[in-house]
Length: 89
Image (cartoon, rainbow, N blue to C red; front, top):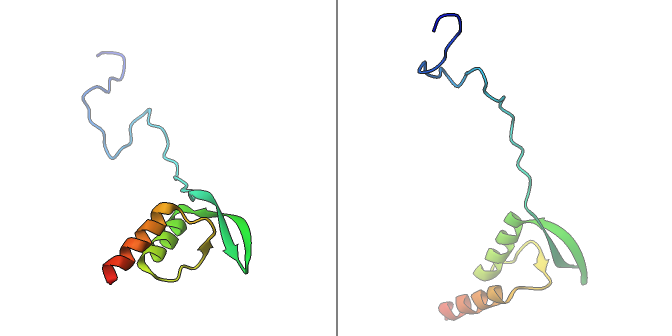
């Protein structure tokens, strides 16, 4: 190995090796979905994050009042509401 620096089998100390790409801070973006909601008697087309949609759907199934009213409720949600009400009786 005379005349050059050889790095094979030396190990990596703390993630600092010569040809390592620099770390960048990851930016998390919201998972926005277009949804039609009902507000003050009129329909509005808005974008909601998926986390909020899941919260609204869970509140509807559990029988709580969600913070927004979805205009077109999917059939699987209405079936879940009916099943939940049948369990309570």
